[in-house]
Image 1 (cartoon, rainbow, N blue to C red):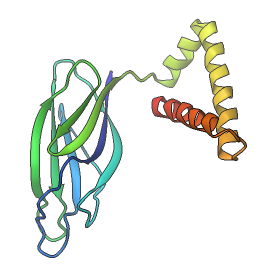
Image 2 (cartoon, one colour):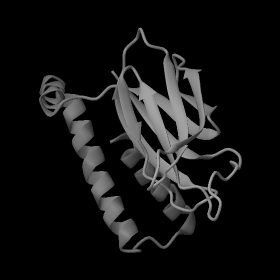
Image 3 (tube, rainbow, N blue to C red):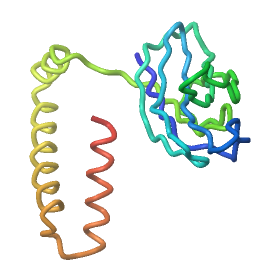
Length: 167
């Protein structure tokens, strides 16, 4: 089991720690001795990261720490805010350290596990192949603007996005 962490946007403005410019912010995630940093949003008072990170999940660890920093070239990065939040049993949206985040527990299969699952469940294999070919066909038509009905275009765009979000 893994945790999929999506870092979104700031929930409120942060005070500027620089004298002449806006903050150069990045988010640091700490969970179970794993640390990940987002990209730095330079000179931006309303950063939008929309970045995802996969972390190994431990059922015995229920806290995640989110820290917001101002990146500095010539000195140590400034810690703007840090908070620890509890991870619940279900998918959850959080605001920790003024940062909007989404935490999901996901199960990922290795290529061998995936192939074994498909070979042991022939009906599942057929469904996956059908969905894959449908996805490929719709994606091609959508990209080539071959769909004329706007309502249908919106539904297909959502369908494609849902599939891409879960692959």
